[in-house]
Image 1: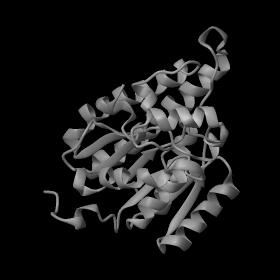
Image 2 (image 1 turned 45 degrees about the vertical axis):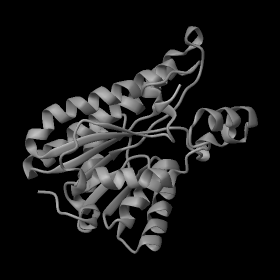
Image 3 (image 1 turned 180 degrees about the vertical axis):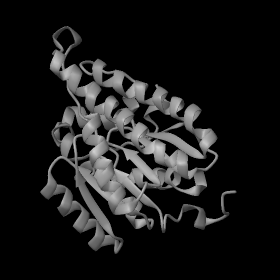
Image 4 (image 1 turned 135 degrees about the vertical axis):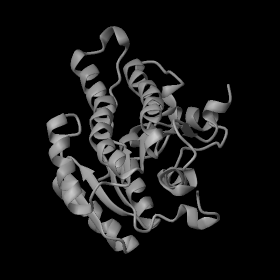
Length: 259
């Protein structure tokens, strides 16, 4: 049974890997898990950047933090990379599938290579990581798999039909993971952020016309801060959510609640 009180949210003694966590939302998520007590592996494409992020997180939280580099779009690379992770922390208690990319163009002009990049990074990577990690979680009889989706799994805008397709698929893949893994004591859920201010969205934040639209369209009246996601993540990563499975939690300032 889930323990009562705030102790249910304590991640001390747990281990986690967050893909795409050397910067942006993933960086904040990794630090949030470490702040709750988890030993975290930072993942990225740039070894120096990932190592720097891990060092900074460890210095800030006082919790041991590691870093790894591997290509999340390649199944063989995922297998090798997760073997390295397992040497560092064992079978992770928590997998956060955060790595993702965005490509924008009207659908009639959308390039094959951009479609492939979106599907491979936003969707295939989640399949590769979840398949690899779930085997060990099944053997252990516990685990948390958390996808980072998007409001675009429910809401469309011009020029991002392909991106929306990948994020919509994440919602159903999460439900499918629940169907397969819940009997083994594993919970699979997703977090769907709204519009968040990060390094990758800086140009949009600085575009006053677009930024004004975001503030007006969001009942909270502002862009999200990456720290707004930490509470939802810690909840889904902890024993507090042991009876929550196959769900997508929207952290969007109310955007998907109104028209």
